[in-house]
Image (cartoon, rainbow, N blue to C red):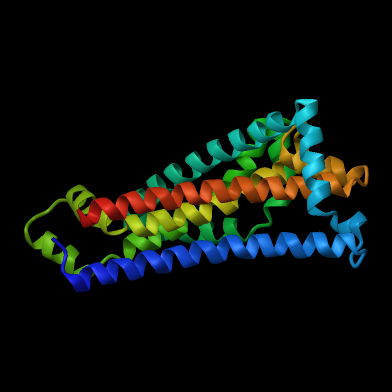
Length: 265
């Protein structure tokens, strides 16, 4: 049984969480309302900025054409594959660099240099090597996201409490035991945050790739809309990307909540 003070504390947390969600939704609704109000009263140029009603009509048109979910699926597939490879691959490489300090010091400047390169400049090379298709788009997304993942995860592993590591070493713990019993569990929150960052980076990479080579996908819709001066289609693509990114972000948040709940129990 919870004490009255604890129940009061839990109630306060629930109210605070509700207010946060309510405020987030209110901001979105207020933004949409102001946007539509400005468009209806011709206070903004709807040719450039479009309007919520025009975007909804464009989505309906794409749905009736049978292309809406096709474009969404193409982008979602590319994002999902890129996200999984970048996250899992980045964590594995960071683990190897944590284990082998000599290799880490050798690779470190190369990671920094590769991270500083403008990835768009590598686009033509990627297309020549992998071809003008899904592979090129995924590789582009990986170039943008995996290096950041490696750097962030490796830094998190290195920053683990040194005293705890020494304590395990004093009990003759082997490196793999230290990693699985201390390094990895203590960095779960950091790994989740890296995944949150990865979502945005992967979306950037995929859309950049679709701008260059894709014949389908949300990035293709945006590029095609800009080429034919259909700004409603461009804004529709942007909104669709925002919705997809939000759904993936909240999926990671849900996994985080499940993890924290298991920790408390």
